Image (tube, rainbow, N blue to C red; front, side):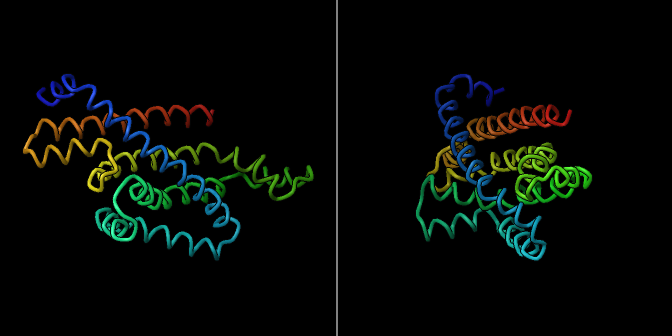
Length: 206
């Protein structure tokens, strides 16, 4: 209750950090998608390259988040950009894998029909295969978004803002209410995003 009371009595502060968190995650996710989708298509079309891409993104995902941030801070510096780069790297494995899984799950008969209609491989990909794989692609975005919302709390450690500020300020001030308020706000944001994207996923599946 005290954490909820903190949120209610500091709505402007929590709201500002929540907006910063949304921007940080939104920018990171948009850039991650722009990189991961072409990589996923290449991995699907070129299996040998796909092994290398899957291995590289898997290794990036296994690097401890604080260690990756520390490396990036040394090479790039503190701030929003560094946090975005880290989040983009972490999102690659989930997004690339969703693209490959989604395209592999497309009914071969659909591809045959597209070829029968005279579609080029790229036309078939963009107009037939990607729409058919859309539910899986959105599922990947959902998982990546929820993951990034959690990881973005560490952005406060490198002055990138977001709800992690409440967590770190609470730790430094020995204020459990502030810590729980930050964690609760991040959890609620993750749940909201998950619910919204699940509904979108269900809509395109029907």
